[in-house]
Image 1 (spheres, helix red, strand yellow):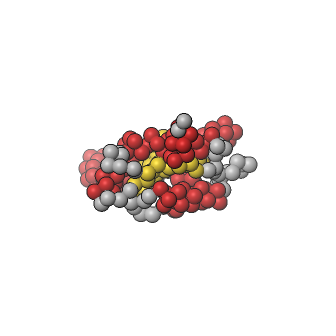
Image 2: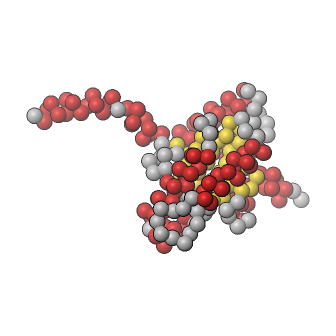
Image 3: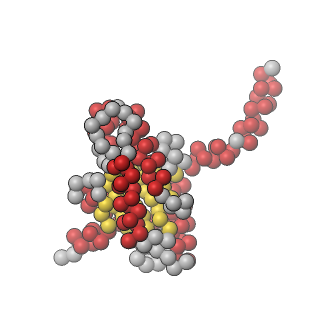
Amino acid sequence: SDLSYYGLAVPLLYADNVQLRRLLIHDALTGAYNRHFFVELSQQAIRQSRMREQPASMLMLDLDNLKQINDHHGHAAGDMALAQVAEACRGALSANDLLGRLGGDEFCVLLPGVDHAGAAEIGRRLLAVVRASRYPFSTEIRPSMSIGISTTVDDEDDYESLWMRADSALYVAKRGGRDRLAQEESVRETGTV
């Protein structure tokens, strides 16, 4: 009967809350953490790094040419492109690194215990794996992304300040012609008189 069917479904639903939790904290398309959860985890990771007297770095990643893909090939292709780039990045990151999707074509990576030289090295590795990948649909567009990097400089630094500086650096990378990374130093230099 219908009744016994529903009786069975409810406990199964609760038993499956691991799956439910996954859905709540991950972006369904790319498997990256969703914005809310990523921010929370990053704040914790930054605090822990500070307690260990270690740096933390942030990479802002922006998929180049997503608008072009969406316009020429449709949004399904754009989704595939995002999923593929996220997958490529995840493969190049370590278990401690956090990958989040902030929305649209913007991803963010929080690197606990990593200084700016280490962050630049990881950034270059991410650029390389994305460049080496191919979109799973027929297109002339080559996968690439722009990356902005920031690293904690003092105990005052938090998610917000890291994000703002990494975002400024990302803007520099895009303005410089995309498919590249920029560190916040270059942002600071352009700011000096």
